[in-house]
Image (tube, rainbow, N blue to C red):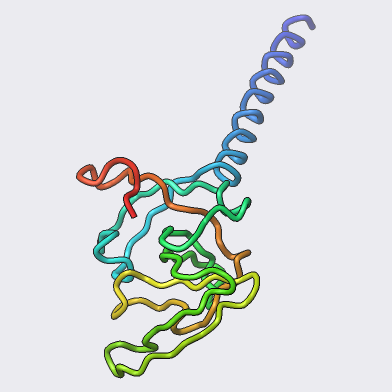
Length: 161
């Protein structure tokens, strides 16, 4: 009987260790920072077309510490199952002048970013679906701020915006 107690105690100890580790991963991934793969043409030349692995920190946006010029990870307003990476161009109260579709017209539009919203745009305006198409984005959709490039090796280091 003593052998079974010893085995059960060891199994319980190992299970607790695994549970603590998984809890730590959950907290780190959801509340501190997480890796993300970003690809596509909308952020060229800042990000690569074939993909970059970046670290996204999840603290700044919770304290309203992101602003114009920051590149952020945002839950897509058009498809909540997807994330998009865009640059913040304007915060609430800002007046934004933009070309709705630069490949078709040169007519500039102006909009005031409403309270609780941000204006986001891709760096490659000709290949980006952003606030010019779906309007101001609720600040609550911001998931994090990009801060470190992991891959490709040529761009390894702090994320230069």
